[in-house]
Picture 1 (cartoon, one colour):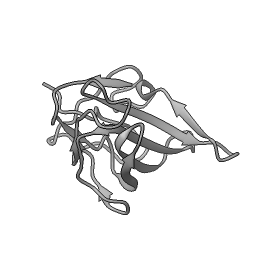
Picture 2 (cartoon, helix red, strand yellow):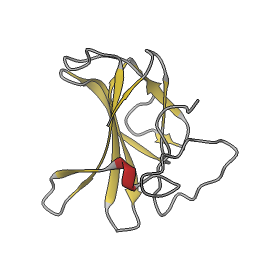
Picture 3 (cartoon, rainbow, N blue to C red):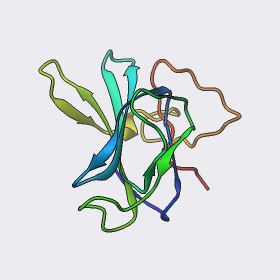
Picture 4 (spheres, one colour):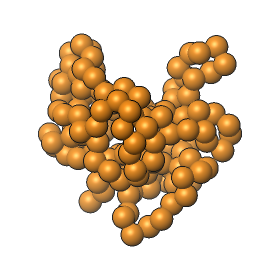
Length: 136
């Protein structure tokens, strides 16, 4: 999904995980990919963040839900308008990256966007996501 907001808006980890990519891509600009482990269906789930103005984490870093990992930007050839391109995917048995609808994985249930709340404890498993930007 594309999330439009102001340049520099904090980007938050939607669940605990390990950063497996943090680099610059010609088309997508500053890019981060987080490995979140296995979901309730037994699929290995990853989240990705494109067009960041900066990356606050490096490959191999462990992140916690709600931790700032970068800032919204417009980097890369496809980053014309300030936005975050946020994606959720798994790797199928043939090694292909398969996109998953993020709305199927919110902590409060399908289609119920869940904002991060530091006062709320959510289990790490089964994997449930919170919104990757601060809610207003």
